[in-house]
Amino acid sequence: MALTRDIVASYRRPGAVVRRRAAGRPREDRALVTLMLACGLIFVAQWPRLSREAFLSGQPIEPLLAGALMGWLFIAPLFLYGLAAVTHLMARTMGGQGDWYGARIALFWALLAASPLWLLWGLVAGFIGPGPAMSVTGIVAFGAFLAIWLLGLLAVEKGEADT
Image (cartoon, rainbow, N blue to C red; front, top):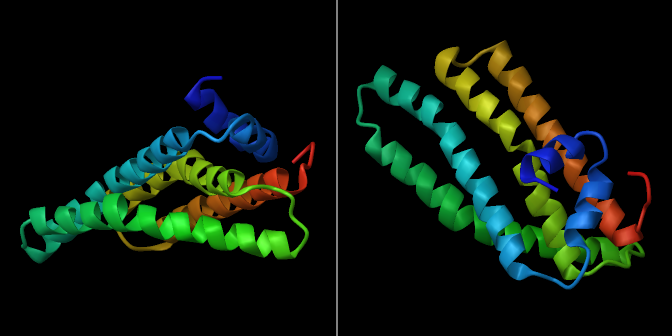
């Protein structure tokens, strides 16, 4: 299925999408591409906010972009691999039957599936600025990420059919 169709389907049936993406033999190249694409889109989502901050403070935008680039494309992937391992270990102690690869796919796919909402959050942060609209958009984006991640993790660890 196309990537964009899977992203839309993740908002209706996240467990089924994650289970299908994790099916078959582990393909670490797919997991890494999913993670880097998600981190890249979230990095791009920071641009409007950083542009606004640079304009309002009078400082150049380049150092702000460099910091966001370093954080999202170099540090975040390392942290997220560790987070996927910890959640798999936690699921295993609660009776989970999945594998390490499934836990990584559940987390990485949730980031990618929620990235359109993070892009919207970035636009709100850049054009409207701090306030209720930015807060609500951020809460919705984070909530969607958590829901897709947890339901996807449940599907790959327990084999749930209709999550």
